[in-house]
Length: 332
Image 1 (tube, rainbow, N blue to C red):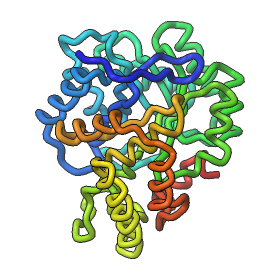
Image 2: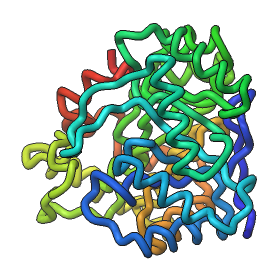
Image 3: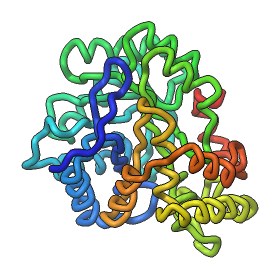
Image 4: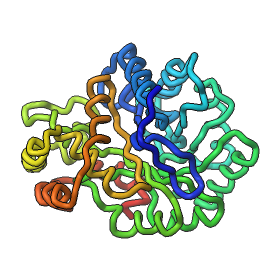
């Protein structure tokens, strides 16, 4: 195992690798995945020094946690910081049926995750979305009891707004906020990121490549045949405009001897030591490319060129469809 640059998640959280690996696509939403390649990618990440591994109990209805368990077999459990999202309700047809963060439900979700993961504790446990029927104070209070009992070590949140973040943190320290943050999704900069910093809460940024849209590997003639087909930014009327931004970013990247993905990831890394990007690589080559972003040092002129190529609010379309946007406390 090698060592990557480290960052600490907030004032109360663990120290982790400066890049984390998001495992969702290995089980769900991005079409069929090669399980052997997924396992090899997780192993390659661990060998490269990646310590933060992000999953959800509803990714593939438990498949993702089982995959992670198998990948960690024979490895030192303490070298992995496992982050788990819970609460999203699924149907046997893969449908989405809301969110449940009742205290009894939380204990139930956790019991199943611990068994699937083959571990006696989860490092960071977080509701995937807020449950509008349950006050956030009640949700965090239940999680605090699980910290006290030793079943989880830290409490995280996902996609919550500034007010919810303050209310939650008043009950128990929140280690990190997992939220979408990229060159074309910069909404957190207005209120959410300043609030997190004021409270000493870290940010784990997902969607740093906007689900492949700004990776430099997407093309106008590539149809989105998975859940991206429902995302407005991939729609026919928006895709051309968004890929024009990518081509502008490609010019910047080429001048610096880097790939588009590396520049996009490095930009998120540059936003502060309290931000840890999650990359959703499903293959070893994509992982290797992403890790190369850690070697890319962006100066003032580089950042200015990147933001001139992709100005804030330049993307066409919202990041989710209307139904999924309605679940986001961060967008209210």
